[in-house]
Length: 310
Length: 161
Image (cartoon, rainbow over all chains, first blue to last red; front, side):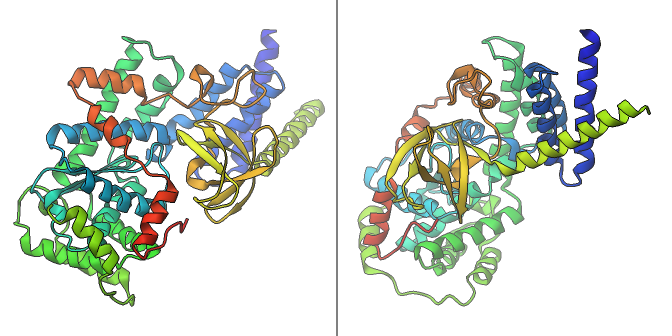
């Protein structure tokens, strides 16, 4: 029996070897092909599910990146980043304003390249004069009263929210987690055992989780994302606005106001984003020949009603 | 190497090739969001035929832009899902392995593992972090029809995906 198992395992090994020879592409296919090999092994009764799982995990252990984080896990990361933001800021309690930015924001998100997240997009106004906006993974988006004041139209509000949706769409939060943590979090320790309260596995996983949250909040609140991520978010904002019919020039208008009112080194965008001047160049290039539009009266009316006193 | 050895190598090779080609022909995907509506037409305004849950597996019939046509569970016709609600990653164990489809408890392979509610609870108690405002924030949601109405009332147009 033992001999048969060894033979069986070596034939699975052969399938894997063949699969590897066939595979000339990315690391991702290594994991896929390993699964084919082990599925074959399980189907023919040569190896058990457990053995297959362990082979698959070994094959995949080396290739973890933020892309391997499931939307469900991204959601739990996002919830905690959001809770950290709530611990630092007060909510601006105005139901009408909150409803309005959610209608604008969720409409924009629906037209983005990531229209659906695990639990949807949600927007909240922070009671702060700082010029700041923060987007947590999975679609928890925060914007300060100070930043909303730089928008003089609904299209301006849309520009601010679309930039943040751009960060969510590109998973910039997850991309700021150190790679080593993701590998630890997604490999065998975390993925095999049932995590009992007080178990070392749960403790280890929570510690990695904590470090990951720190990576994200450090980027969001202290250092800012890289200039490349900001450029991508501005480009996404222009695309999303065009798709739903907002005037993308409103983003330039918001950035011009920001340029005038923002003091160097004040908390928020002044420290975490490229200068408005630099961003305007990116945005103008992205807008291209699209002409400016006159202010829409229907949007103007509801903007004044919802955010006139912000 | 002996002749029987060579023969078994050839068989293994053939099986491997068959496995690879079979794998590429049928495309099964898993639901990646908490609740995913299956629609009659490929738009967010399409009539909802049924809702699928996180981890449910569907068989893909065809794709049209960002929309994926799937076989309805139980074989009762087809419906459309947005591609961002699906992944090729296998979140649940394969059918036939004595496993009920769906995201219920330990029956699911990836669902609920890694960073999950247990990790959140432990982190929350260690850091004394309050999630009640996050829970409140999550409740703010409008259905696509309401959003499209909002867009239209502002001379805008939605449903581009």
